[in-house]
Length: 376
Image 1 (tube, rainbow, N blue to C red):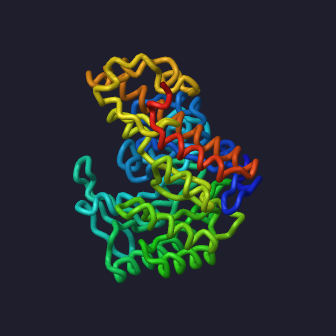
Image 2: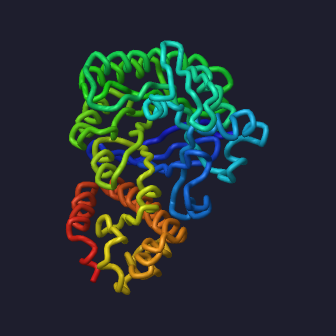
């Protein structure tokens, strides 16, 4: 079994391209991880996720422990076999649900007690249990349990959550140490929008020692400039030989800017969520297929796209599917978006290898600024 490792192949300024090796295969970085929260990609088959260019996907500990259950998945051969995805998987620890389900939970130093959003049953999630669940799932990359909070918050609250996350990080590391089987554990940097707290969190996690480092608690209400400032604050403090993961981000522009600042991994629900609501991402920018101007447009979204739906379907047909609330419309646009995100990442990897990332970034932004009518 291949053990987890990370190799940097090329750099361009702060940007890096490289390769993560896991027990279930390799991940080219910078990488975008499509989100399959409950072991499924909404509206997209796994074979199409792989065809889009994805090397790794994300599953969620909280949701999978509730349904069908971590022990049940383990008995069925683990998450890879259960969902039919034999490639790398990263599992989020449930820290985001600590924030998003605040009305259904009680938090203390030991962990979190939830009332299940499914049936109201009491569920306890401690750092040790989060690590255990992810081991039962068999994910290639596990995340520490952390407390993610919305911004803005008073500094005292940011500091409290950051220190609690650090205490949980140490407990996760101890729990993970035995029998990891080539898998990896990532620590999560917290501290909100406070540079001093972010730096303290990054340094403390580096001292504990993890296989990779995630920046959590961003894309939760703050402007992009704040997010980028936090990346610039913590990235130089992290071990260069470990991958850096920006959690829950983001738009194509977010990805471009974060890669330029040294981030290696991303996940976000935007490609599929926005696809289900009629929005397509493309080299001409974001295109809202609900707009009436597409109703009689015979052009494809992008004749040069690798995605069959973007290349072969007319905008008029995609508009019709969206307006008619046909499931196929949501499926097609989700697939189009996944292809675009993966092509954007591939373009950045190639640009970094050629030391041309700045030119690539400028060209991408120029294309978005011109808009989709430039394809006429």
